[in-house]
Image (cartoon, rainbow, N blue to C red; front, side, top):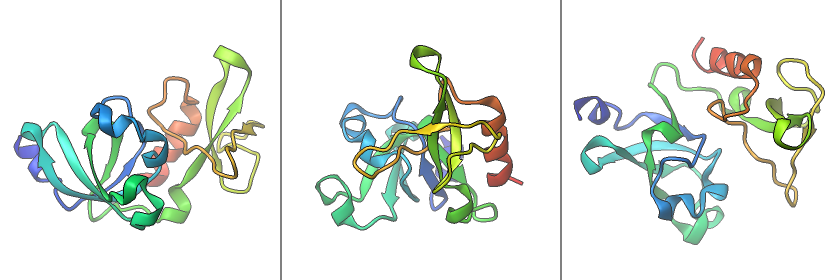
Length: 151
């Protein structure tokens, strides 16, 4: 696919692990929220080979390059590459059980971007990144996040 080839070199952020290959999904908890660059295009344009910015010691088995399906990525062009401090949001929930709504929360706060009081999901001092493509993502938070990424 010609369009996919044009994205080589673009900055990306992994926001989901729904469509990627099973071996990548198996370590998805470590990869979601990671940033990197598209190093190559695989499988006729259906996958991006992402070279992650993180140190190899912080990644599963020290591997820095992972095949990720395009729908699991936020892709930035060179012009609209985000400032990581402004666009890295954690997941916060309002509601309970199957009715819980996912909100974008700035690090160190308990208020979502839309103003809703939320509770975080810390796991051993680590927080889950907010995905604007989540099924239960708050529409207002999604709009605000995407507005900040692509003004």
